Amino acid sequence: MIHSKVTVVFCGEEYSVSPDTGLTIGRTGDVEVDDNPYLHRTFLVVSFENGFWWLSNTGSTLTATVADEQGLFQAWLNPGAKIPLAMKQLIVWFTAGPTTYDFEIHVASPAFTSVTADPPADPPADSDDEEVGAATVGRVSFTPDQKLLIVALCEPFLRRREAGTSQIPSSAAAADRLGWTITRFNRKLDNVCQKLADAGTRGLHGGVGKLATNRKARLVEHALSTKLVTEDDLALIDDPARTDTTPAEENRAEDRMVVAEQGNA
Image (cartoon, rainbow, N blue to C red; front, side, top):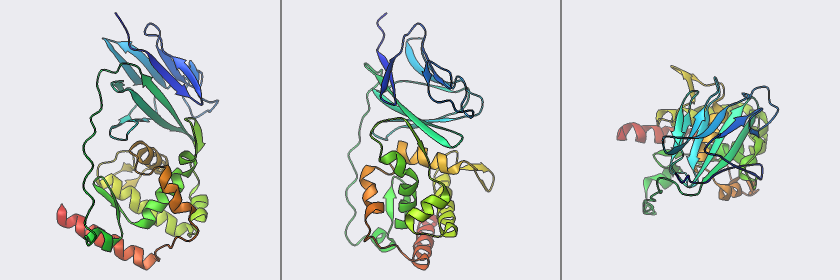
């Protein structure tokens, strides 16, 4: 049987995967990610079974976010779950303690090919979205300040040139980067997480009416894997002449968006 060549790329190093032995990824795996006590000794496993390559989560507590390179596909890999490596390139994100990691999986001859739909037409210049001042990504709309918050949290990852490790900024550091108070930052973070959770994004809630404690990590993984923010968005945070909306203006915009979303429900 001829097997498709599979390669894992982490921190600039390439690891070829044998169909006979597979490849383990973790604190002490074939790919030694990091000496991080929060990371499982063996967390993820790439293996060949029943004619397909698979990625399995063999850990007990950590989850992983898996996406294609175009941001069209995303899966949340819980402990005990596995998915087929059916695309040419996949990117995997996971967080252990204070550190977030990512690596790439390359499949030379994938079982499936990605089909890209035609992009939607640009909205008319007099559309209501411009009045609200919202940036729409998929089915979720964000105000300018909400988009800035996401960029600030993803900034260390967007500035990197290769997969590896980064730390998500603390709320205080991100707030300072934006010139906001910590109270304002936390309120915006609540709004963003609630909006994505309402749209079906998993991992942002710890239970009924309760936001997850690791919501920032999950938010960053989701934003990067779905291309919600890209390197081009760094201009939003780098531009010293950018004008922030005032809290009152932002609240009015958010209120209008909620009313509009409820009306479309």
